[in-house]
Amino acid sequence: APPGHTQDGGQEASFRWQCVDQPIGKLLFRRFLEGASEFTAAGALWAEIEAFEQCEDTEREASAKRLRSRFFTPGGSEHCGFLSAAATAQPAG
Image 1 (cartoon, helix red, strand yellow):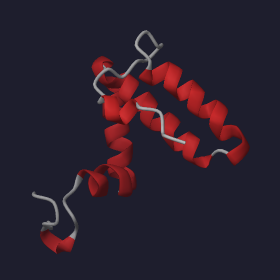
Image 2 (cartoon, rainbow, N blue to C red; image 1 turned 180 degrees about the horizontal axis):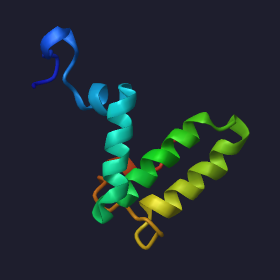
Image 3 (cartoon, rainbow, N blue to C red; image 1 turned 135 degrees about the horizontal axis):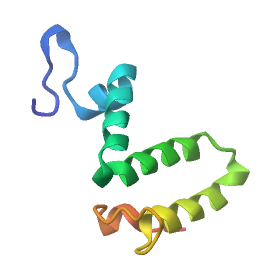
């Protein structure tokens, strides 16, 4: 459904609602990513970003560096080449 449209019952039919906000949808989507070799890096990236969001402020810089080298750098152990340059750019400031 287009953004802003709803399914029966008024629930939003978006990726975020189905695969992030709904616990069972999130679990099933994560298992799908983990089970398909071409998507394992994407699943690992998602898990690491969630861990980054939960870490202490003092740990964030080191965690961000690990994320960049592992997922955003060509040749990284789980490089996610499907991400756009804008998505992988270092934040300004």
